[in-house]
Length: 126
Image (cartoon, rainbow, N blue to C red; front, side, top):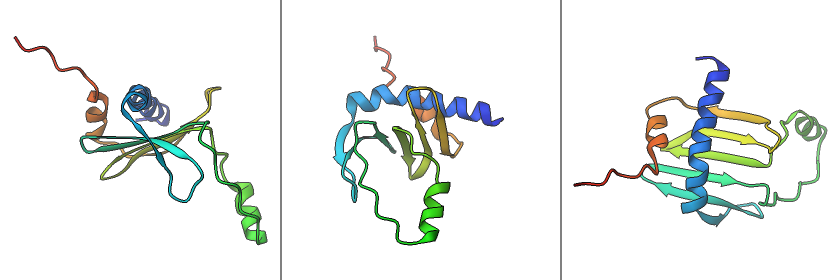
């Protein structure tokens, strides 16, 4: 699977989970940060959604040259972020409203089908 195909799969999972997290998630304080994330626990999954409305902590002053170089080389943090956990982190990505996406990590596996089945209405029994 190419990187583009893998990114497309990650985005399909994101697009499926976002409305579910928004509908069923609860805002929770983030330990060590001045802000909140929406957290949704369902089955064996924990989904965390960070939005541009979640303030980031104030930056710590730079104490050394190495810290300054490290900060310069760090990737820019995009305003939206999603993490999906199932025992361990399966998916981590961030994006902005202009279409820039950064898939930080994506562990492929059967969990993808399970995640995409979340929220499916059971068929009525007759």
